[in-house]
Length: 207
Image (cartoon, rainbow, N blue to C red; front, side, top):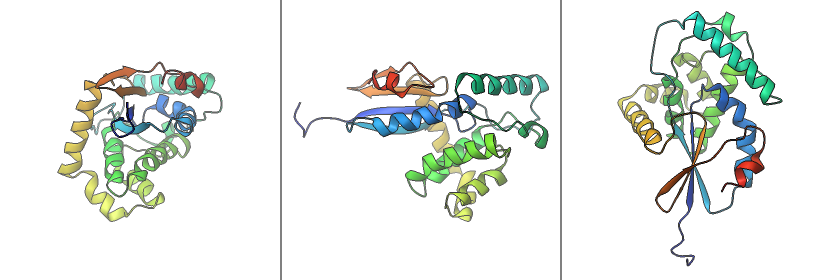
Protein backbone atom coordinates (compact mmCIF):
# COMPACT_ATOMS: atom_id res chain seq x y z
CA UNK A 1 0.00 0.00 0.00
CA UNK A 2 1.44 3.37 -0.94
CA UNK A 3 2.20 5.98 1.68
CA UNK A 4 -0.48 8.29 0.30
CA UNK A 5 -3.24 5.70 0.66
CA UNK A 6 -2.10 4.05 3.89
CA UNK A 7 -4.58 4.43 6.71
CA UNK A 8 -3.71 4.79 10.34
CA UNK A 9 -4.80 2.03 12.64
CA UNK A 10 -6.89 3.26 15.55
CA UNK A 11 -6.46 1.92 19.07
CA UNK A 12 -9.50 2.71 21.20
CA UNK A 13 -9.04 2.83 24.96
CA UNK A 14 -12.50 2.27 26.46
CA UNK A 15 -12.44 3.31 30.11
CA UNK A 16 -14.16 5.01 33.00
CA UNK A 17 -12.26 7.51 35.16
CA UNK A 18 -13.71 5.88 38.29
CA UNK A 19 -12.96 2.31 37.19
CA UNK A 20 -10.50 0.85 39.70
CA UNK A 21 -9.11 -1.67 37.19
CA UNK A 22 -8.46 1.21 34.76
CA UNK A 23 -6.45 2.84 37.55
CA UNK A 24 -4.56 -0.40 38.06
CA UNK A 25 -3.84 -0.52 34.33
CA UNK A 26 -2.59 3.07 34.20
CA UNK A 27 1.16 2.49 34.40
CA UNK A 28 1.14 -0.30 31.81
CA UNK A 29 -1.13 1.78 29.55
CA UNK A 30 1.32 4.68 29.77
CA UNK A 31 4.19 2.34 28.88
CA UNK A 32 2.27 0.95 25.92
CA UNK A 33 1.46 4.40 24.54
CA UNK A 34 5.13 5.37 24.70
CA UNK A 35 6.05 2.37 22.51
CA UNK A 36 3.24 2.37 19.95
CA UNK A 37 4.15 2.26 16.24
CA UNK A 38 3.69 5.57 14.42
CA UNK A 39 0.82 4.24 12.31
CA UNK A 40 -1.40 3.77 15.37
CA UNK A 41 -3.64 6.59 16.58
CA UNK A 42 -4.96 6.40 20.15
CA UNK A 43 -8.50 7.48 20.94
CA UNK A 44 -9.97 7.59 24.43
CA UNK A 45 -13.62 6.51 24.76
CA UNK A 46 -15.53 6.82 28.03
CA UNK A 47 -17.65 3.74 28.60
CA UNK A 48 -19.69 4.80 31.61
CA UNK A 49 -19.87 2.37 34.52
CA UNK A 50 -22.83 3.85 36.38
CA UNK A 51 -25.49 6.50 35.56
CA UNK A 52 -26.12 9.59 37.67
CA UNK A 53 -27.42 8.82 41.15
CA UNK A 54 -27.89 10.72 44.40
CA UNK A 55 -28.47 7.53 46.39
CA UNK A 56 -25.82 6.38 48.87
CA UNK A 57 -23.98 3.27 47.74
CA UNK A 58 -25.26 0.12 49.47
CA UNK A 59 -22.85 -1.25 52.07
CA UNK A 60 -22.62 -4.56 50.23
CA UNK A 61 -21.33 -2.78 47.12
CA UNK A 62 -18.91 -0.72 49.20
CA UNK A 63 -17.49 -3.93 50.65
CA UNK A 64 -17.19 -5.44 47.18
CA UNK A 65 -15.31 -2.43 45.81
CA UNK A 66 -12.95 -2.32 48.77
CA UNK A 67 -12.19 -6.00 48.16
CA UNK A 68 -11.54 -5.16 44.50
CA UNK A 69 -9.07 -2.46 45.54
CA UNK A 70 -7.28 -4.99 47.73
CA UNK A 71 -7.16 -7.49 44.87
CA UNK A 72 -5.69 -4.90 42.48
CA UNK A 73 -3.05 -3.95 45.06
CA UNK A 74 -2.00 -7.59 45.22
CA UNK A 75 -2.10 -8.34 41.49
CA UNK A 76 -0.65 -5.08 40.12
CA UNK A 77 2.50 -4.26 42.11
CA UNK A 78 2.95 -0.59 42.94
CA UNK A 79 -0.74 0.30 42.75
CA UNK A 80 -1.87 2.10 45.90
CA UNK A 81 -5.33 3.12 47.10
CA UNK A 82 -6.30 5.52 49.87
CA UNK A 83 -8.96 3.61 51.79
CA UNK A 84 -9.85 6.78 53.74
CA UNK A 85 -12.25 7.45 50.88
CA UNK A 86 -14.77 5.07 52.41
CA UNK A 87 -14.90 6.88 55.76
CA UNK A 88 -14.47 10.48 54.56
CA UNK A 89 -17.27 10.41 51.96
CA UNK A 90 -20.78 9.20 51.30
CA UNK A 91 -20.00 7.02 48.26
CA UNK A 92 -22.47 6.92 45.38
CA UNK A 93 -22.54 4.53 42.45
CA UNK A 94 -22.40 7.39 39.95
CA UNK A 95 -19.58 7.63 37.40
CA UNK A 96 -21.27 9.51 34.54
CA UNK A 97 -20.25 12.88 36.10
CA UNK A 98 -16.56 11.95 35.83
CA UNK A 99 -17.11 10.74 32.26
CA UNK A 100 -18.69 14.08 31.36
CA UNK A 101 -15.76 15.81 33.05
CA UNK A 102 -13.33 14.11 30.67
CA UNK A 103 -15.38 15.25 27.67
CA UNK A 104 -15.69 18.79 29.04
CA UNK A 105 -11.93 18.91 29.58
CA UNK A 106 -11.33 17.78 26.01
CA UNK A 107 -13.15 20.90 24.79
CA UNK A 108 -10.27 22.97 26.20
CA UNK A 109 -7.61 20.91 24.41
CA UNK A 110 -7.14 17.34 23.23
CA UNK A 111 -4.28 16.76 25.67
CA UNK A 112 -6.55 17.64 28.59
CA UNK A 113 -8.57 14.46 28.06
CA UNK A 114 -5.81 12.23 29.41
CA UNK A 115 -4.81 14.81 32.03
CA UNK A 116 -8.37 14.98 33.35
CA UNK A 117 -8.70 11.20 33.43
CA UNK A 118 -5.52 10.84 35.47
CA UNK A 119 -6.44 13.83 37.65
CA UNK A 120 -9.75 12.20 38.56
CA UNK A 121 -7.96 8.94 39.37
CA UNK A 122 -5.50 10.79 41.62
CA UNK A 123 -8.31 12.65 43.40
CA UNK A 124 -10.31 9.47 43.95
CA UNK A 125 -7.74 6.81 44.68
CA UNK A 126 -4.94 8.85 46.27
CA UNK A 127 -6.57 11.93 47.83
CA UNK A 128 -9.83 10.21 48.93
CA UNK A 129 -12.01 12.82 47.19
CA UNK A 130 -15.34 11.97 45.58
CA UNK A 131 -15.45 12.40 41.76
CA UNK A 132 -19.21 11.82 41.81
CA UNK A 133 -19.39 15.41 43.11
CA UNK A 134 -19.15 18.30 40.66
CA UNK A 135 -17.11 20.33 43.17
CA UNK A 136 -14.37 17.70 43.11
CA UNK A 137 -14.37 17.62 39.31
CA UNK A 138 -14.07 21.41 39.09
CA UNK A 139 -11.11 21.35 41.49
CA UNK A 140 -9.41 18.70 39.37
CA UNK A 141 -10.07 20.73 36.22
CA UNK A 142 -8.44 23.80 37.74
CA UNK A 143 -5.50 21.73 39.01
CA UNK A 144 -4.64 20.65 35.44
CA UNK A 145 -4.82 24.21 34.14
CA UNK A 146 -8.37 24.39 32.79
CA UNK A 147 -10.59 27.45 33.02
CA UNK A 148 -12.76 26.43 35.95
CA UNK A 149 -15.75 28.56 35.03
CA UNK A 150 -15.80 27.40 31.41
CA UNK A 151 -15.44 23.80 32.59
CA UNK A 152 -18.22 24.13 35.19
CA UNK A 153 -20.61 25.55 32.59
CA UNK A 154 -19.83 22.74 30.15
CA UNK A 155 -19.92 19.88 32.65
CA UNK A 156 -23.68 19.33 32.68
CA UNK A 157 -24.53 21.09 29.42
CA UNK A 158 -26.79 19.53 26.82
CA UNK A 159 -23.82 19.34 24.45
CA UNK A 160 -21.74 17.28 26.86
CA UNK A 161 -24.71 15.12 27.80
CA UNK A 162 -25.20 14.30 24.12
CA UNK A 163 -21.49 13.68 23.60
CA UNK A 164 -21.51 11.21 26.50
CA UNK A 165 -24.43 9.27 25.06
CA UNK A 166 -22.67 9.09 21.70
CA UNK A 167 -19.49 7.72 23.30
CA UNK A 168 -21.42 5.17 25.34
CA UNK A 169 -23.21 3.93 22.23
CA UNK A 170 -19.99 3.79 20.22
CA UNK A 171 -18.18 1.91 22.98
CA UNK A 172 -20.89 -0.74 23.04
CA UNK A 173 -20.98 -0.97 19.24
CA UNK A 174 -17.30 -1.94 19.02
CA UNK A 175 -17.41 -4.40 21.91
CA UNK A 176 -16.27 -2.13 24.72
CA UNK A 177 -18.51 -3.63 27.37
CA UNK A 178 -15.90 -3.99 30.11
CA UNK A 179 -13.31 -1.54 31.38
CA UNK A 180 -10.59 -1.14 30.53
CA UNK A 181 -10.78 -2.44 26.98
CA UNK A 182 -8.30 -1.95 24.16
CA UNK A 183 -9.85 -2.35 20.73
CA UNK A 184 -7.95 -2.05 17.45
CA UNK A 185 -9.69 -0.79 14.33
CA UNK A 186 -8.05 -1.79 11.07
CA UNK A 187 -9.61 -1.88 7.61
CA UNK A 188 -13.08 -1.47 9.07
CA UNK A 189 -12.75 -4.38 11.48
CA UNK A 190 -12.44 -4.31 15.26
CA UNK A 191 -10.25 -6.60 17.34
CA UNK A 192 -10.22 -6.65 21.15
CA UNK A 193 -6.79 -7.10 22.72
CA UNK A 194 -6.23 -9.52 25.58
CA UNK A 195 -5.16 -7.34 28.49
CA UNK A 196 -2.08 -7.64 30.64
CA UNK A 197 -2.07 -5.31 33.63
CA UNK A 198 1.67 -5.64 34.19
CA UNK A 199 3.39 -6.25 30.84
CA UNK A 200 3.13 -3.73 28.00
CA UNK A 201 5.15 -6.03 25.74
CA UNK A 202 2.35 -8.60 25.80
CA UNK A 203 0.05 -5.91 24.46
CA UNK A 204 2.53 -4.72 21.84
CA UNK A 205 2.82 -8.27 20.54
CA UNK A 206 -0.89 -8.22 19.65
CA UNK A 207 -0.69 -5.09 17.50
